[in-house]
Length: 195
Image (cartoon, rainbow, N blue to C red; front, side, top):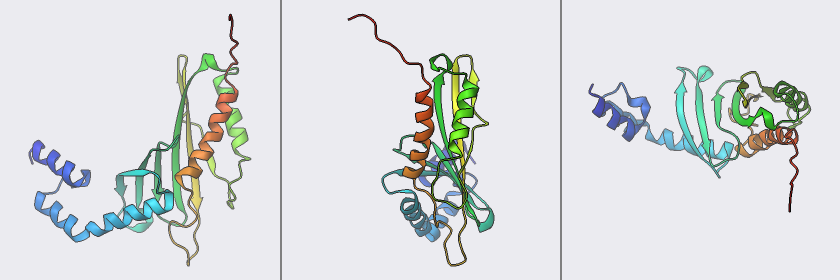
């Protein structure tokens, strides 16, 4: 397969076609194209219609192992979601905040401990709390990254559906806003001089 043809096919149909011929890709789009539109409508209905979404990766041969990597566009903090379709349906939602350690009134690791400590008490009305993982947070010199990975499990009954009780992008942004408020509350207060 030549690279130019492969790139043209990727642009026309998506990266999933990289190992297919033009005829195979066209047949799949023709035969299963309605599923893509249906999936788009489901994602927008579940996570919020005010945003656009890019599904960049899907995998799994069976529904139990099927997942999607989704990038919502137009929101405040949420950068990526991975959704697994099983029982429970699981969302891994990610937000990263960059800051300078010299701007903090505490040590970076103390800030992470404070966010972790307070997040345990954030109630979102679920049977089990959302789990915030900050272990991927890192620093390099004065630059720090608070890497928030939120793990949410939504159990659905036999009469429920796979997207039952999932948070919207707005819900996730609101959660990450609380982490940002803690970060902002630990920034050094600056005083104006002169005037």
